[in-house]
Image (cartoon, one colour):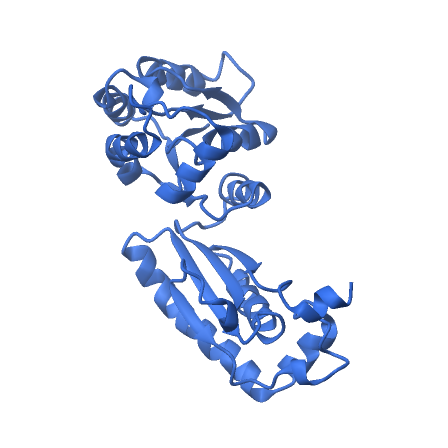
Length: 295
């Protein structure tokens, strides 16, 4: 029997997570009152009342009048010897605020003033204990819906090792500014530039011709290997310090050729390890006026 408690910040994707788990044959219940968590776990563990062997329960600040009720409910599972896992979905305050503005929803803790920002701050305080107890923490700030589903499949279906860190490797152009959310920045402008080859200029680092041009140089291959080695040294230390989101930015002049190739190569090396969720993002790949003029 597998019993998963899905919790986290409002707007971070709990409902989506429950929907995905339901698609994977979990029996899901959302917004279960705190007082019913233990009885539900007992029914699930008994096994005689259902053909299901996998269960997921969505709980949040709406599930109890006081956060102490939620804490007591989770602690009661420990006291009874139930095996369970906590999935905590999180996102940055800025992203949560943007999502609420886009959907025009009211935050459950907004209060009479209707302040979403105040509601987010209060909710983060109330859920600190559950976040600390979580077995898995997923920061959805940069995740697309399909990427969230992929991570849930990796954790709960494929049972892959998960270390509470999601890595974004993004390319960018220095002439458009360094991404503000970068944790690490690599400058690859020292590499030969395909831009000066007229037949290559309209292409991007996602095209085979550009990949071959860039990776044909020993400097490129050496950089990918050495930088990946550095990341593989740093990442476990970030995990140990409780970091859940790592943004690695790779920049060239325009963010169209070299940085795209190198970001893809580095992300590929990290995926081969199979221990972390990895995505690529090419921020400036379509900003080059050459591409626009080509139609």
